[in-house]
Image (cartoon, rainbow, N blue to C red; front, side):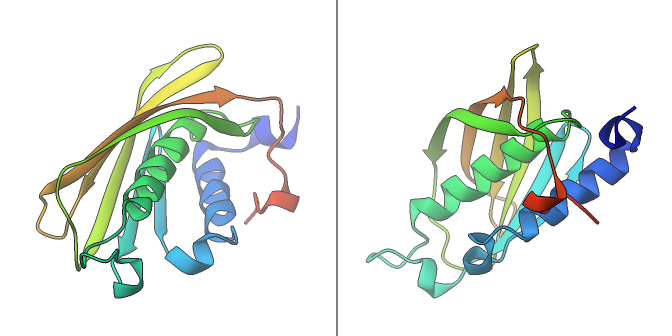
Length: 151
């Protein structure tokens, strides 16, 4: 058996979290990720350098949080490979200017070649500020320590 088939689900989740936190793009956004079976939660503290000209967080912050939460909910179910976002649709419902943006991702459907997952975005007051849904393709790309998939 390969190392990935022998590991526990909890080990898989922690390795995915480490891979995520080590990704260069996250040095700017500084998100925090927690993964469970078919679920993931991202938290991003809203800063003024995320703002567009009207003084609220730019849609890129919403998209990143929603896509990442849905993506890692999907990849939590695939221990032996990397998944890729193939489509993602987002709806922005209200602006956010401060506090913590939380994205909760969950798997809607797990089919043989793709996973459908959604994310709901809330502000620090628990108000829904956006939501997204996407398709995530299962690939033959193996999760490796070179990509940060390690303890």
